[in-house]
Image 1 (spheres, rainbow, N blue to C red):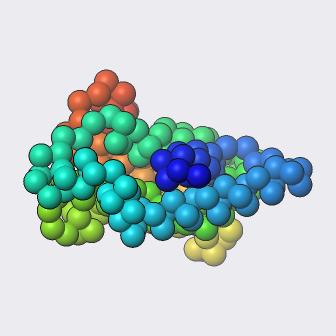
Image 2: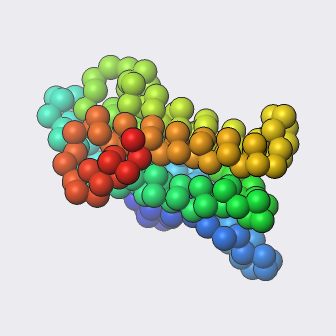
Length: 200
């Protein structure tokens, strides 16, 4: 399987973590395969295989002339939009178990989008992409999303309406951090502009 195909499949799997969870065994097996694909894609991103596979990206990293575009960031944008599903679920006590299914899937690879963001930033920053504030936004957003699992499981001392309110606020915070990432990466796109306005 080509690396680009693996990454596309993994991002779809990750973005669908907050969609309704299938219950039959065949679907469960498919979800496990998607988790394995997602981990393989993360390994590719963090080890730099992508830069060596695509010479243009490697050249941009060296000479610093890389200009970010929509296609480079649409997966992070997609994550932000997918969080609307999570927000709706955590706001409804009857949907908390469905939310937990997605959150548990998320927490299998909580750093996936941080790696994605770091790879993107490394194309235009010569040194310390890991320490770039924009990568920090996605790292923090990922951590906030992951923390909602313990919250809904009652392991953070909040229950009922209090837990629901806090979970909703955390999703909104994660979406806001994703908005900061989109705003500071200098890609002009109407979808990004609309997202940033609706997730301040």
